[in-house]
Image 1 (cartoon, rainbow, N blue to C red):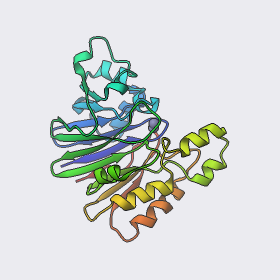
Image 2 (tube, helix red, strand yellow):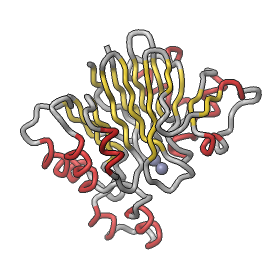
Image 3 (cartoon, rainbow, N blue to C red):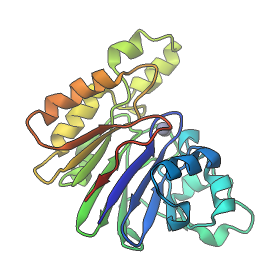
Length: 255
Ligand SMILES: [Zn+2]
Ligand SMILES: [Zn+2]
């Protein structure tokens, strides 16, 4: 069994749980401990079961909850050395920090995880491929563009988690300052619905059983627009499909 729970995705905070019967990992923790506990309880998950935390990059929506989580539940953290510097670890935590590098697999319980670099305006940002019990999960949230390497990493995933951050027209017509609009739309910002759909079209296959649209902006996107963009790719395919929420769990998927 492999179960995927997206507890929260987007600028309000990110937290994704992947679990097997025995093991469980958390990808990013950008929500308060109180909120995280509440999200876990809503999904009948246990924080005590989490074996490790994996961190994609240092933006606060991905790391702001880490310090308190680790104080309450000291678990190993897997993070790049560049990003580790931004995390406030509890005292005497050094030997719980595992530095990981792009393209180098590491293992946690039943899981083998391969981080890969994605272009984003952080020190270093990872997408992840998670393998467990014969299932491959591809995670790419927070990236400004994609390249052939990223496509290759995500191909043949049984579950694809791909960013659909904004609608380009809504972004241009938003009240955001010009520099922020440029940043978001840049090659180191976030994927638009159209870019997300293109990435999905290049990576989806008959192996793909589930798709999560990740990191939707509240201000410059709507679920309807994201769904229309994704539908151009999904169409006839019978695939579990879920648009993720801010601080609200999505429907879990069970392999
Ligand atoms: Zn983010
Ligand atoms: Zn980010």
